[in-house]
Amino acid sequence: MLSETLYFWLNIIALNLIKSNIDSLVAALLGTVIIISLTQHSGLGISPDSIYYMSAADSFLAGKGFYQFDNKPFVMFPVFYPFVLSGLKWLFGNYLQITPYYNALLFGITIFFSGAMLEKTNHVKWVKWIVLLLITLSPSLLEIYTMLWSETLFVTEIVIFIWLCKKYFETYQLKHLLIIAAVSAIVANTRLAGISVIATGGILILMSHDLQWSKKLKHAFVYGFVSISLFVINLIRNATLSHTLTGNRQKGVTPFLENLKYYGLVISDWLPFSSWTSLFPVLLGGLFLLIIGGIFMYRFLRKIEHNSYEKIAATFTLMYSAFMLIVATISRFETINNRLLSPFYIPFLFTISFYIVGMLKLGFSNTVKFVLKVTMLLLSFVAILTYAKRYTATYHENNQGGIGGYTDDDWRVSSGLLNHLKSNSGLFKTNQTIYSNAAHAVYLYTQQHIQILPERKYPQLVSEFNENPSPILIWFSNEDNPEVLTMEEVQKTKKLQIICKFNDGVIYQCTSK
Image (tube, rainbow, N blue to C red):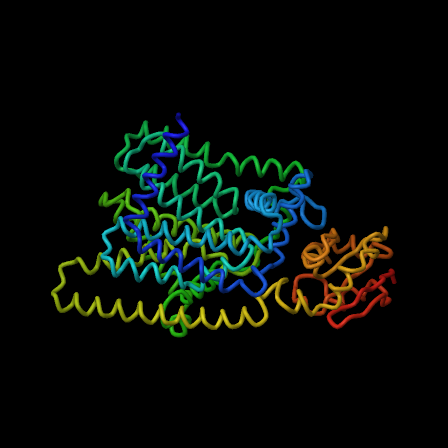
C-alpha cells in the first residue's frame, strides 16, 4: 500500500513538473538527439581516464573489488562512477553500445532540470529559452557528454543538488536536509571536486538568516556528517589498499596566477567574441571571481533571497572555482581546461542571466532598458550562432573518423598492432612483465592487464622498469603522452630487439644494458 501511494504521488509530481516545463522537455529531447548524433560513428570518446573507470567496473563485476587495468587498486578517483558503469554492464552487457544513450539521457535530464529551475526564477520566457539553447548547444557540455568521463554524471548531480537545495531552504525540514546531504555524499564520491558541493551546502546553512544558531549548528553537523560519509569511507579504503589517500600526487608546479590565466581562458571560451576576451584571461578570471564574490556578500549582508536558485548556483560557482584554483596550485595534474571547469558552466549561466535580468529591473529609463535588452539579445545571438557552428564542425569531424581517443578510426580500425594483439593472445601468457605506452588501449581491445610505461615524475616506478632484466615493451607510435618515458629514455638502460613491427608500432623484447 505504501509503495503504491508513493508511486502515485511521484507520478503526480512528475506530470506537474512536465506540464509546466514543456519547453524544457523539448530542449532536453533536442540535447539527447545531439549527443546521439555526435557519437553515432563509433560511440563515445575513450581516453586513458575512461579506461581506469571501465577496468574498475569490470573488476568490481568480477568480484575482485575496484582494481584498474594494470591490476593496481583504483585509488586516483572515487568509486561511484565505476560502480554505475558496472550496473550498466550488468544490465546491458556492453559499455560501448549503451553508454552513448546513457550519456544522452543524463544530458537530457540535466537540461530539463535546468529549465525547471529557470521557470521558477524571475526570468521572462525569452530569457529562459536563450539560456536553454546555450546549455543544449554548449561546446563545453557537448565535449564531456560525448566522452566516457565521470563529469557526465557529476554535472547532472550538481544540477539536481541545486534543485533540491531550494526545497530545504524554503522549509528547513530535517527530511529535506537529509536528502541534500545524501546527494552531496554521492557527488563527493563521484569526483574529488565534489567536496565543493559539500562546502556549498555547509556555507549556505551557516550563513542562513532564518535559522537560530542552535538549530543552525545542529543542521550543519547532521549535513556534514552524512555528506562526507562516503568520501571518508573511500579515503579509508584507499589508505588500506595503497597507503595513499588519492594515489601518488605530485606537488604543484603551476603558480596561482598561471592557473587563474587558464581559468580565465576557459570562461573566455564560453563567452561571445572569445577571440577578444581571451587576450586578457587573468583580468577576466579575477574580475569574474571578484564580481560574483562581491554580489554574493552584498546579498548575504542585505539578507536578499537566501533560498533562491541563483544564490545557490552562485555559491557553488565560488566554492568550485576556489577548489579548482587552490588544488591546481598545490597539486600537480592536467592544466585547468574546459573539462575540469565544465561542472560550473550551468551555474555560471544561471548567475550571469540572473544579474543581467536584475539590471533590467533597475530604475533606468525606457530607452536605457531597450538598449540593454537589444545588447543582451545580440550577444546571446552571437553566442548561440557560434555554438551552432562549432556543433556542426564537430558533427562532421566525428562522423568522418570518430571522436578523438581510443575509439576513433586510427585505433579502432587502422591499428595493425592492436589487430595483432587481439588475434594473438599468446604474447600475454609469457612470464615476462609487459609494458606499453598505451596500456589503456591494449586493455580496451584485448581485456589483458599489462603495466603502463612509467611516467618520469615517478622515480620509483622508473627504477622498477630499469631494473627489470627482460620486460616486453609494446610501443605505439601514435600515442601522444609526453609524461611517460620516451623511446630515447628507454634506450638509455635497455637494448631493444624487435619481435613484431606494424604500421603504428612495434613489440620489443628488452634486455638490460
